Length: 352
Picture 1: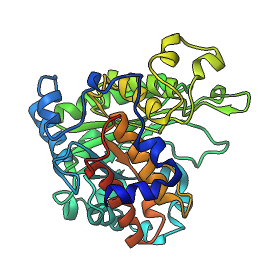
Picture 2 (picture 1 turned 30 degrees about the vertical axis):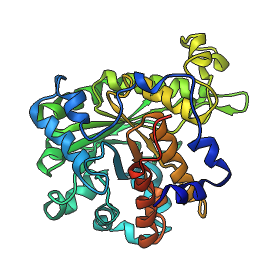
Picture 3 (picture 1 turned 90 degrees about the vertical axis):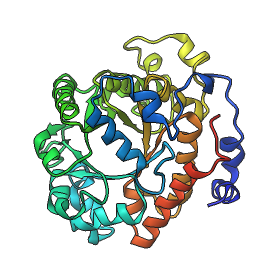
């Protein structure tokens, strides 16, 4: 996909996103993605040789292999959102093999899914595409609904099925967050000992984050702090929702922040909001991948390309996009994944 096609897909937002020049956090402060990212950033860390190889395996696979960017297909929504809500739009994906096949045919760096999904096809596919095993979930069958990530398996099981990495979610800000932080930190430590990379879904959950009619669950300041907590427990890659607003700390009047967060380090531009998330990943030492979000129909392609442009120009490392791809016919899902990947392959889309 050419730069002009990206412009066409962005439509009226093209200049706003592609022409933006920030005066906030300068790109020279970032540890920027690139083909040498593992050698440049992780080689001097405490990660063992096997973990470095696993990270390089992730970065070397698929259409983005060797670019320093990641395109991951995540399909854990069968638990997180229920199988019916996730797969009814395209029932083929009730079959676990089709999930892995989509990731392969879509040119992804990796497929991220559950113990069950990846375990059923591990012997056939673990050597063909990197596996990321999601180790905890919010099962969503309890009434009333609760937000509580619980462990679904063991790190040894993930390693035995050939996983290159494990992924986990922490609901920062929830009443269960302390337990989740301890559980995931211990699991990540063991995963590193076995040589697997770690990816953390750094989500925030608290009824108090909805304040005076505004939902701050995707506010740049608190999602960025969630990122900072994630890299603290040694997540190698951070998954986060693209920020849609800012100022949760000041609006809700909790925690601690600083005026310069809003006046000098961020603005209301989506690239600046996302760059503040990157800054809280040790200025990009841990790669930030943003999620693709729910499928909204005809606008999915344009929305996904816009998210990729924002993430890349902010200094992020890629997208982890699921529902927009698998809740549509296979051919269209592959085309959407490829379009997102093309943004990262397009040299004209550079850091702001």
